Image (cartoon, rainbow, N blue to C red):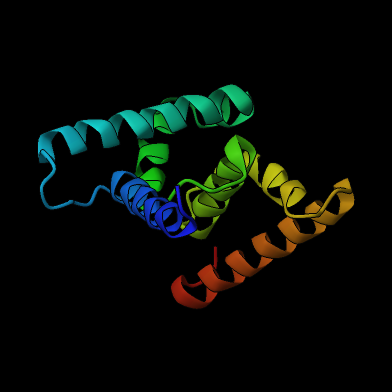
Length: 141
């Protein structure tokens, strides 16, 4: 196989994975099968992340499946495997204000805040900012 053929096939595989991950369409493919394959891929990612990092699934409880499905439909599979997928999932939850309070420690630890006092300080600051915002917009608490 020539280098040009390998490059072309790699580009096609990348396009197929993006379509499957982001639930798009490809002309000439059976759309029902694409949708079923896409759903299967999302469920496999969900199980893999839950198996590799059981804290995330147990911390989110019954909402884990819905939250992960929402995340997976808008994010392609990262190249770093389940650990990278978990990190991106936690970042997605934090960005959309869906991260439960008890997961903020994990979020800060995964983003380089290894020492307990560091994430505690940031969490306290964030809570102060939130309270100040609420006071400014709704009056005293």
